Image (cartoon, rainbow, N blue to C red; front, side, top):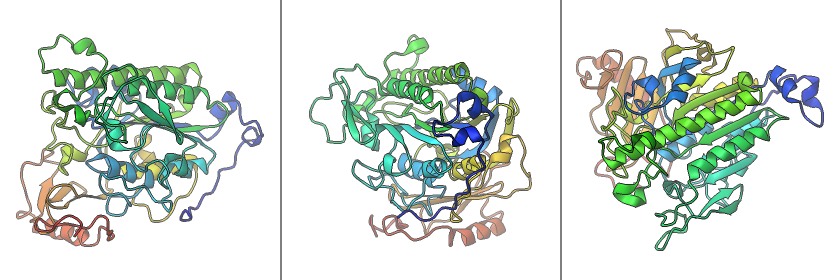
Length: 470
């Protein structure tokens, strides 16, 4: 059974209590806004114009930032897909969440997800795109984790392929017209020879339909795009996109063109989504958030340096340096988010569950690592707040750990390695290790690291000389 969650529903207006549900007008006047959470896949901190990008065109996302709040110190749950999404869904960092690395391990039934929390508050919940937290028939299926509706990929390898032979609609395979020849795995990964249905486009169409069909109740939609992840099975041709658009004639490598075209295609579709919210008259009562699950990749022929995808930060996907985990967060909520606001408040994926719970006026379990960021949506927060954030990552020869304490960042590349310490207020690119210069900071971080995590037999801390699983 699910662990208990304290859920205190708000007092609803009479229209919400009718058997038919509220009209759009009643919904707009209620205290329950819609929530649209858009998550890109492997999009770097520097990939958007509003975060300094000079070459890739993202006018719709830049407009979103000009109409809301842009976070400059926001972090993904991890530096790869599955643990990052587990942190997002459970409100726990990777020292506590059940899934701490890329695997096919399902999210256990005991986890209480963001979707379950909001469904308990009366939301119609949907997930469209990439899941990565449970296979068909497992306890981690989206429909068993609080989502009323699911359309997309269940596992990460399947999600590499932008032209798959099938996707999933709820608990059934949904066939597409693409052809992926043998050899291929049962998970649907591979490279298509007949390319007709581009999965990203299908996700946008499904999202538009979901919005159209959610008129009678407030909705929570997690739209988890796979752009700009690479199709790893396609090698140097992994940046799969139907056309290169405005980048076709650029004097760039093919993969750089594909990467840019993917991001601009996503940006255009986000513009369509925003237009639909306006057409339906619900844009003012919809919280729209955009973020990414980790930093930029060097896969599928892509070079993240081509268009400076990590901006001023050090590192990329699979690093715990800032470039691997610091990501954009843009929030637009008219009448709540002041336009063109920039906040340096520190936050992370595990903060979004308690944030949404506060929006819905419901309580959450006490074992969450997240703190609500709602005050920052209005442009306010206590500048003296001293957050401590934690990450662990288990790929490679050894487990890595990172901690952020206020302006300070600590990284340990294995449990026995010397702790590196950086002053992010003065060295955002993590170029100068100050561990020896500030031994008191290093000692405080080491003391925290000793108790930051709970032991997990599936994810032990491995040293350089420890074999996997030990």
